[in-house]
Length: 100
Image (cartoon, rainbow, N blue to C red; front, top):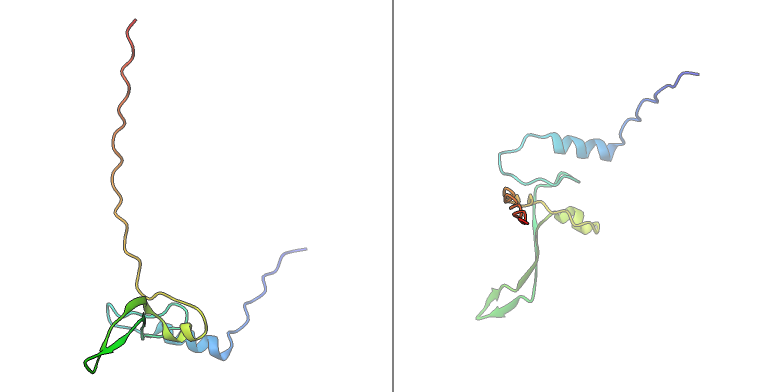
């Protein structure tokens, strides 16, 4: 009995729309959510206060997250992670052999 592959089902309207939004060309450096395709960001601060009629910023809790996914309870970070610097390993010193 030969094995037959089942063709993939066509995407529903919502999935097709999200994929079309993700495929739209964007300028270099523009952030875009990998989950929903949104291009706006959200910053959450705790402890804002009014001093002299102006808002004094508090502590930043989350920065650069997708607001559309956040409304659904998912935190998607739009900022790419910082690259880690990989150092070359130090050469190992061999212990001198004891002379008898």
